[in-house]
Amino acid sequence: MKRAEHLLVAGPSGGGKTTRLRGIHATFEGPSVFVTPEQERSAADRPPWRTVRSGASYPEDIRRARKWAREQPEPVQIVVDEVQGAPSFVEGDGPIADGLHRDRKAGVKWVIATQNPMDLRTRERGYGPVQQADLWVFVGPAKTWHVGFFRANDMDDLIPHLPTENYEYVVLRPLASLNGEDKIVYRGTTDPRHG
Figure 1: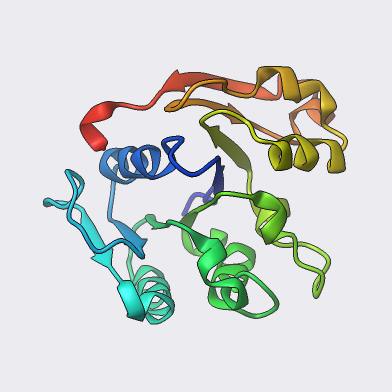
Figure 2 (figure 1 turned 120 degrees about the horizontal axis):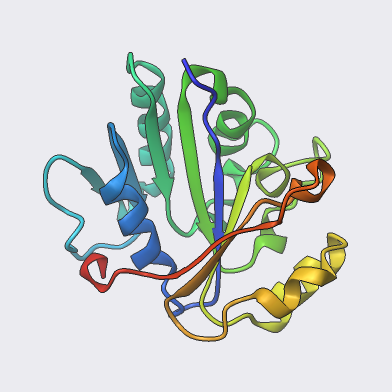
């Protein structure tokens, strides 16, 4: 089975993160589960995709999604919106942290979203979702904390390339320069059909 590439999606509130996640979820070629704390239905809530609208059961739904994904015979994707709402899940041995660390070989691709990626930098194991993500996707206009995030990670050269409008996004491969590749993989605008 091909090794899965995890995604970190970040951006300000109202910038288009959830819409971008719905697009990633809807266009994945294979089983995908989208766990969100939102209660309302969206355009992404139709077969063949599975959307879990969690509310109070959000942490338990993340655990169930991971268990389900690891049981599948084919590559699958777990999309989790607003992970800053479940901090214990992205730290230590929480299911997201553990999944990012161990599930690649099982073909499980994690797509996690937060408003501020600095919230996801864990201290327990020295690395967390930020370090485990192969690609970073920034959606919507950059805020002060996003600029701080890039400066803290010695990536000042990417700050001028961050989106300036809602629903714009840029896909970055943070370690690309080590291989002589361009860090900017793609720029685009989120498809409004997924809103």
